[in-house]
Length: 110
Length: 114
Image 1 (cartoon, rainbow over the protein chains, first blue to last red):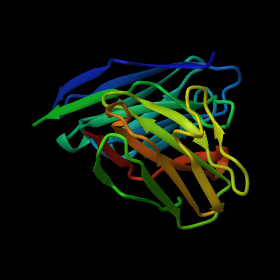
Image 2: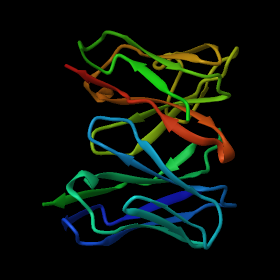
Image 3: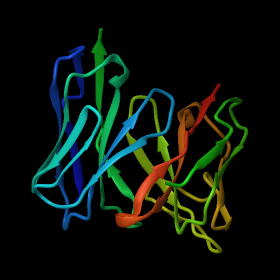
Image 4: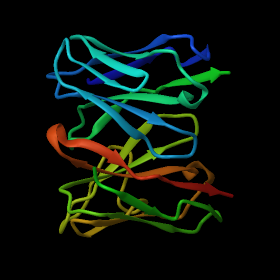
């Protein structure tokens, strides 16, 4: 069964304190790994798609990397506005839909 | 990316009533999905909205409770029927497009059943 596990569940950082979020996955034939940001009460906002091991993508203070078993979302010198829940997902459903992890809730304090 | 509009954005509903959520996309899309996100939980697929045919439901979701329409490639509705407090959730419309069918989401419809 396809599965996505994210850790930690919650992460509290001071502004400027860099860290990483982890997403491990089990799928039969990876067809992409997706990262989203979700603010409270809103829909997920697409960040990145990674397709093959070794691939990296960057956007502002975020960098996503992919290995054969997991993906990392690195946050460099975060700011309070980076506070959100970060979701990881893989295509795996029978209907071409995404299977989501439970997310990592990031809080960045000034 | 597609621009996805959902209505209503938020509503408080009485137990036993039904509510229809609308999803409008600014371009024609092949794949359109409805997800549910219960408080503090991640996203769960309800069904795929198929244009011109009946929706395809995930295990645990049935058409009588969550009827879905998709009259064309830019519009869909999800009805939450005979609501109970357990239906209090964010309901999300999403579409797939582009390489790898990246899935984009609307802003969501936050329903509270009292």
